Length: 205
Image (cartoon, rainbow, N blue to C red; front, top):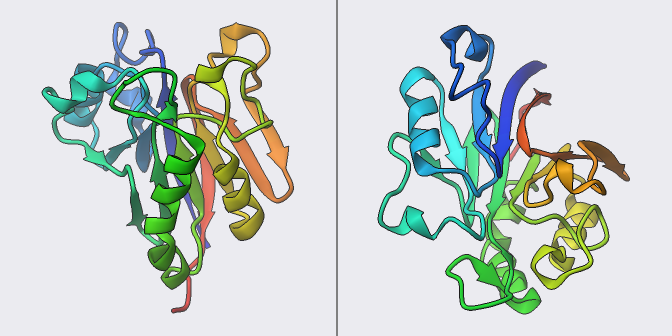
C-alpha cells in the first residue's frame, strides 16, 4: 500500500510558503489541496514550483476566482476527483448568510451531494472529503456563517472516509482544533498549512 503525502492549506496564506518560500519545502509532497479563502495568486505561485496537482474548492470569500481563477490549478468543487487511486470529493462554500456566490442553504448543499450520488456509489465511496465549511457540530461555530452542513455528517456516517479536510474555522478563533476524530474519520482543519499522510489502496470496481 502506497502512502501519499498531502499539503493542505486554507484561509490564511502561509508566510513560510509565500514570503519565505524555498522549493525544498515542497520536497516529498505528492499533492496540494486548498480548502478555500486563499488568494488565487498564492495558489498559482505554489503551482509554479510544484510538479504535482494543486486542487481547490471555493471558500465563501473566493468570488474573485470567477474572474481571476488560480492558474495551473484544478477546481474539484462538485467533483469526485481521483489521483493515483485516491478518491477525493470536493464540496466548497459556506452556509448562506447573504447573497454571496459560494454560499448555500442546508438544502442546497444536500442537492449538490445528490447530484454526485451516482458517481460516489460507482466509485464505492471516497477517501477524502474536502470542503470549506465543517460538518454540523464537528468544530463549527455558533453563528450562521460558520454553522456546519448536516449532509457532511451523513457522508461521514455513510462512507467513513479516511480524512475529512476543511477550512473556514481559523485556529486563532480559539475554539477550533487542528485534528479531531469522528468514528473512523480523521478530521483536519487545514488553516494556514498542514501535512497529512494518506495510505491509498486500489478499489475493485
